[in-house]
Length: 160
Ligand code: TYD
Image (cartoon, rainbow, N blue to C red; front, side, top):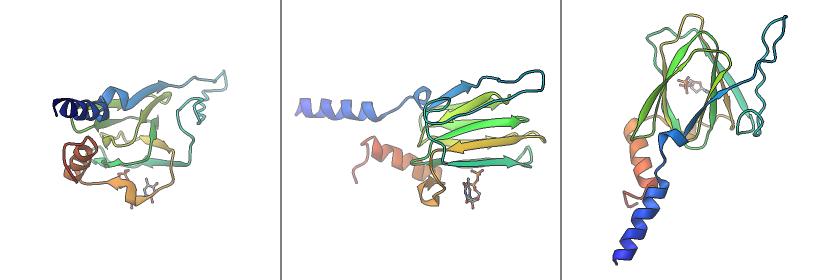
């Protein structure tokens, strides 16, 4: 009985991820020369861990706007402010961090099930997003309480 409980505790601990393991800041190389800068992002493990299936970009958001406010069950993302700046607040239900996207060679990789808010867009902000999956509204969690509930279920704290 005691061993069973200890095993359950260990299984739960293994499912709980540190936020540190769920994001990565990547510095891309500049292949530029006297003609200007050139930054290349190749998928499939070359520059970023995933194969790129979707690209979108966000611009013209006012500084007071908060975008995102969701987690994705399946999708991995790579965010780059190719122009201007913005901030991303990432959260895994236990820890949160604010990351400033402030240079065109900096990429923020996010694994699935990270809650994210994007905000403080500069007037010239162009936020480029690469994703490993096509858009599917059903894999978005847009309610923070639902997000927490799903995390706790996955961690085995709540019985179905
Ligand atoms: P939304 O997820 O609210 O954008 P953000 O994460 O920047 O806050 O998306 C806005 C609308 O665009 C919403 O109706 C879904 C749609 N959409 C797509 O159809 N495909 C996509 O790849 C994305 C990101 C959004």
